[in-house]
Image (cartoon, rainbow, N blue to C red; front, side, top):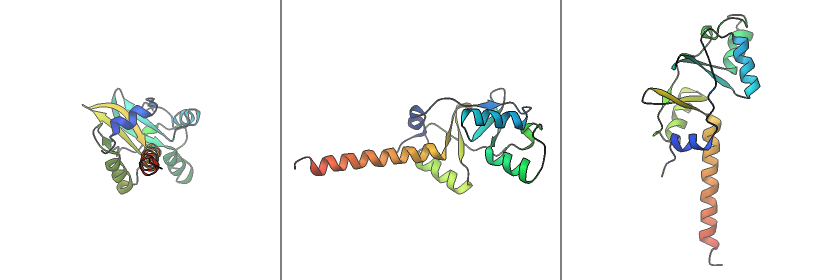
Length: 145
């Protein structure tokens, strides 16, 4: 049976960090550094407006010099946020991330944000599943020895 996003979310921290569109890039970067996260959601009320990653800050502020660190995150955020549902499988999420070259997906249910998952979360889940399968195979093979 394929693991769903709902199962994955049960295994990880429920914390979702967010800022408003007016928050400065510097402040958003500081929150990400303090929390040890690679992306922060940009919310207006409960509505997901976009997300900002460490990569966005490096690329758009430092390398391309599109704006200064005190500019609002709305100027550099990725507005192309892809949502998955609790029923989607880990394999579906991996396919989306691979095809779109995204590292994070928001999880929505009935129009409400319920979480965020990263490529790291997916990889950890897949490794855990493989380790469990190996244990079960070993038990089956060596049980009667």
